[in-house]
Image (cartoon, rainbow, N blue to C red; front, side, top):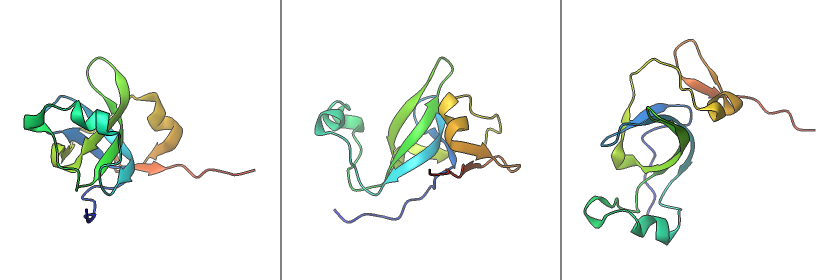
Length: 109
């Protein structure tokens, strides 16, 4: 599998194409890097190709906050300007005046 360039970047807010959740990207895999069991658990008729970027999100829906692993084909830019409420977002990111999330600098001892 030859990796493709990622369409989205760390700190971008995205939403799922089919399901009602949104999140901020905190990591990117150039190709699928989860377990085969996880991949096979996706119904075959909607199972994404492994040869595309996959994104780790601090995600949320109307009921809860969680982390998600989503293929690029299933993401869209999110133009909702409401700050994300997932508690991990504030640990890892600062929100810029433009609404984009910027990684916090970490001080190492």
